[in-house]
Image 1 (spheres, helix red, strand yellow):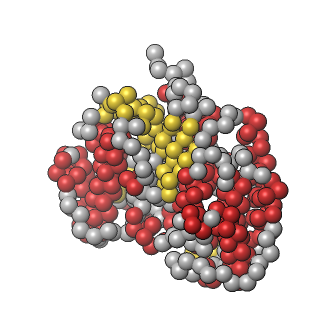
Image 2 (image 1 turned 45 degrees about the vertical axis):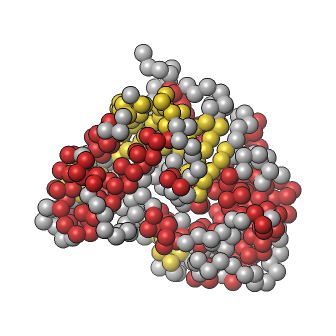
Image 3 (image 1 turned 90 degrees about the vertical axis):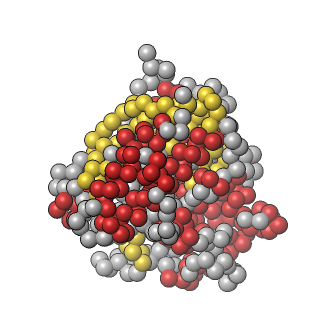
Length: 426
């Protein structure tokens, strides 16, 4: 008999759910709410337990934790993703205060961090509005507090929920007000006028006020339906988050897939706007993210020496006759497997002896070569003292790779497999 009464649902979001809703943005690779709810129903954490998601994305795992009357710690190196999660927990936000903050009238130019140039993406009046709003938020949080974003994210009391919603609304609005457009890749944003001639017609302030109302309405409903639990989020690499050793009892997460999507570029307007409020180094983010297309420099092949399946996978990639296989692509996959092993080392260090949780994984291809992610993670996890059990497997024919002419040439019938695996300590 399964531990919980619930069977595990599919992590794949339905096509309708993939379309961006009027309130919250969903991370492109986020898993479904139905899966997150079923996963925690399976684990049956006691009321008041802490659920941890080291790759929190847009906070679907938080919604499931709150529904189960559990507290939550989310971690994401992308500060905008961290803010989205925190905003979903901001049930103490005051509608009148949010309106006053978002209704601030631009008061000219304010000094700003020099980590991004907002003038390439936004009109001058929108930059002035953001500076005015962010100045008001910083004054409310106290300049002596250090990084104002960190103050918002790590607060567990709800004292800054109004400020959180004001910030999230403005950043949400910055996306549609930016001078950007998309091409065939849904996660890649191009800076500059839309080739189809479409351009933003509404400023950030008007849209921020609208998004603020929608978020507050959603949060009011959530407060009626669900218990009040705390949510703490760290905008950092998982290894830099202050999680005590041997403290994680329950986890639910999905490490970035090997799809070579640039999640900094996909959130370029929001992160650029956020750099006016908190120091956000976009290039450093791109370099540090797991699965990044950027190379960090020479890497030791320790992960390959320690795992035969990783070594064989890297050997097949390096020996592939296509261009750059033995150079850039070999280094990319070596870096990914190194990061994956680093994550599992961290999870082992931070887990209690009775820890348990779920990872969502997806197979990948290099040209026509299938890269067996489930088997690789299984072997890496077992070598670190984890027990691994497959709980759900689903084929995926619709994916970003299917749009690539190069992939169509090498593997025209490519079908990926998405895996849900239960991990416990042996």
